[in-house]
Image 1 (spheres, rainbow, N blue to C red):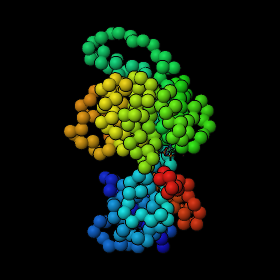
Image 2: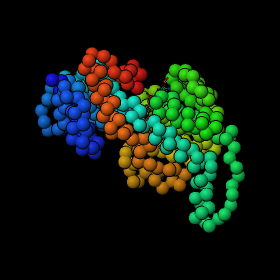
Image 3: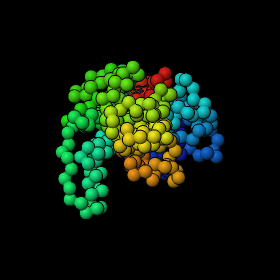
Amino acid sequence: MTKIIFASTHSVAPQEWIEPLQRALPQTQIIAWSQKAASVGAELAITWNPPQNLLLREPTIKAVFNLGAGVDALLQLQGLRPDTLLVRLEDAGMAVQMAEYALHALLRITRQFRDYDRQQRLGCWQPLSDIRRDEWPVGVLGLGVMGLRVAQIAASFEYPVAGWSRQAHTVHDVQVFAGSDALSAFLARTRILVNTLPLTPQTRDILNAHTLGQLRPQAYLINVGRGEHLVDEDLLRRLDDGHLIGATLDVFREEPLPLDHPFWRDERIVITPHIAAASLRDETIAQMAAKIRCYLAGERPSGVIRRDLNY
Ligand code: NDP
């Protein structure tokens, strides 16, 4: 019987996941990770933010199934071999939430709800100027499962939308820029920048003073990718010099965001605690069980990470 270890340092109660997974995978034995226990000889792992020593203690693991879309934490695991298969969650209810989140942040700025909030606090009845969508071109970094949905929702609201990806894609109503050579042109036409990239060595620190400075004047940043995409002090610099008018941030270099971090006290910045898109439990369990069944049948499941690209 295939042994699967369930390992998460997140605050989830493991049994709430293990029991339904075990029902969906009766041909396996799913065992909860315990830091103090000896190796159980697991062949597979199901993880979310796994303990650093997972693969050192369980060196027989051949494949790791991640309960999230981003695998940056898995790629840091000690003892990770080049041939260990990494499989990620795809969508599982997250893309529509990501689109909602980005749309909310976008409309708050373009429809001036932020200003109406201020006016209400002052008891001020003052209609502001009408919206002109051509003044708010949206640019989405990453056109994968998350970015595509964000780009499509913004396009359906008739904003001019562009996306940036590694390879060229054809997306209805979205201008696609591909590859690092096209990044400057993409930024130069963008005023609302939404980051949905995965964290890789190529994308780390991609939101810096130089790239943010290439956006159209009075730009706005929405970061839902990873905190390590953004150079925090560079964002503050671009807000201070007026090139950016604000930012909505869901992800941070250190989470929870330390209480003494300047972002907390900055009225130009909206902070949420990494909630832009949560995977839905039942969909996640069904998808993971299907991927594991596929793997055990000797086939290649979808969502396998390309180790040469790190996503
Ligand atoms: P995908 O793998 O489906 O999409 C990744 C996209 O990024 C692809 O379009 C890819 O290009 C592009 N990309 C990757 N590297 C580069 C590069 N070097 N240059 C240009 N484009 C690049 O991932 P998802 O959309 O499912 O998820 C994206 C990220 O969103 C996750 O890794 C995670 O960090 C974050 N996330 C955050 C959540 C939150 O709650 N805040 C929830 C879920 C995810 P191409 O299409 O050419 O391959």
